[in-house]
Length: 303
Image (cartoon, rainbow, N blue to C red; front, side):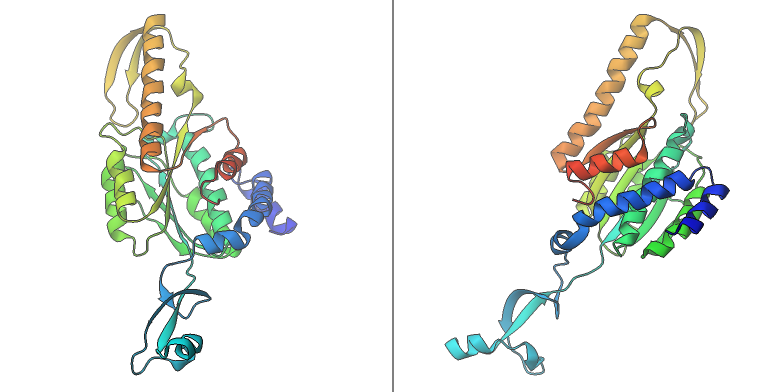
């Protein structure tokens, strides 16, 4: 990203300003060491063809390309065997971002925080020439950004993310289940959400896993959700359903709430750990680049 382009975008957009774009380039520089060589070897497709790494032999059949005959084997054993190789394919990266009404909470909002995280992960994937798609969801799948590759597509990616607005209740299970039936290629699926689904998130994460996607979870939350500073008689309103409830906030009630919230988060982390799904917590007061660096250090997504 050149300075002129960075300045132009920074003046026009407070969400993805000049400082944000500079951090993207910094993260790209850090990630190049991770991507170089080792990642391509680890993420290479198991599809067999005329690739670059030997995989196996098979019996020669009439019509096969004789360029791939293993003459060393023929000399030793008198058998015509064809050399098979692994073909390297682009990695498909699916960034599934929750845009339900509950994501509008926080300062900055959880959705703004999620959009910056998505933009950073998208940029790193694009720069690595992987195929990146962004899939917003709430109670249903929203219009998605079709797969793109190459650093130059970051501008269209940011434009797409700017247009993502919060709305509707959270329905993780049905949305991710529908997604896996629409996705033509298996790949790396990162779910960025607050995971506030009253029905549960297990169905959705399991759907991704069972359909062969390498699955990651990033839980976005506002610290005031974990430790609310409330007291007295209040009417609480569910931001997604509009349901109201009159409550009297006492110290004991707040303590019980904090325990329940911690238990809920621990359940998500325990579930992910048991299924081999890397899980990262992303409070809105944590800089997006710091989160990405934590992911690097933990060995997820790019490592």
